[in-house]
Length: 140
Image 1: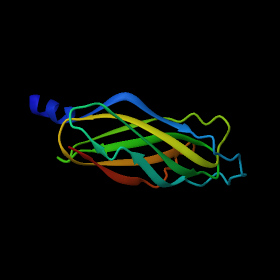
Image 2: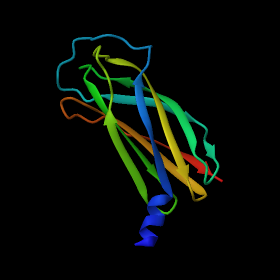
Image 3: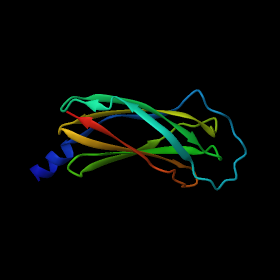
């Protein structure tokens, strides 16, 4: 059990995990009610993090949702040993934004050096899930 606890400890994610609809968003475009959101151009920094130190990763992703009903996100962090942590949460979208930039903030405390993966996807009120964007960061 101690070994399992240590594996989970390699990917400590702090309580801060948020996505906010950015100011460069457009209003409702009269969606059809059946389209999944799409995302592209995921970028973040820093891409090199220190092991054992809490670090804020910030970034942005472009989103498009014809229905304007994006309401949740999922972020998954994968460690070099194959373990991972996945967190989902709500997105506040009161103005039915159909396209724009989502700003991303994730606080991580990786305890093991190596290459980590970060995956991001969005979901909408109809249960549709966007494509998943993946990238990597290095922990020294």
